Image: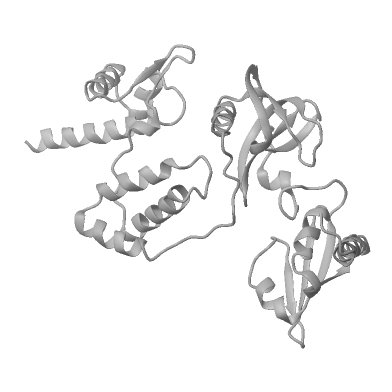
Length: 333
């Protein structure tokens, strides 16, 4: 009896491992599955037949010669701690139910499924605590009517297939078409962006998904450069747009009224802050470009003064003059 029990446990462990392999994102043939599970090919065939009888959507990819199990249809049971379950449920409800993160409304149903899978006592406890937590993010671009473009970009990135996009730049510029090799999607602050190589620009570019007018899947394939990473691509950009040329050291003086507010946030990975005797703040960063950080500094109005570089100081001074002239003119648009 003990031998049969041990054999049954080994089979269950093998089936769980096999599920994980089949949900790994790429088709697996019987030989590779047998090697990874350390069993004979006949055993793998029997296990696959077991999955079919259980109703799991096991499919065979003729093109890539392998079996695959869509990950969204089944996940192995997980023993969540109270803290783990609370964190997942709160994040799912806040990101999905309130539509804080475009295209991720499905996380709300995921939270409900997770809650229903918990023991009743733990479910009640977490439900009470979850109501006490609220996450407020910055306003985001809802990206209405762009769900299809987003899903096609996800598919293109996973398959390493190029797409052709028609893109409408901001500020009334003319729309253009380019062949794009999409490397990665990035959600930053308010919207989704796709980063990849543009044939029109012959370089890596960042495109706002919300400004993609049309998208066509192509059969052309591409390779992501081995040295590519989001961190390397963005460099020391203040936000998302690294500008050409050497990095620039920026020093800003913030008055006492906003000093603590500025100092308590890590705005940039290179920042250095130093409080002065009068309660003001010396703020220093090294950035790849001055345009993005200039708008952030102007958000603090007369409570911030650029000390260096001179180019940034003049840029903000000129904008401030034009702003004052607009208000002093007394004209309304």
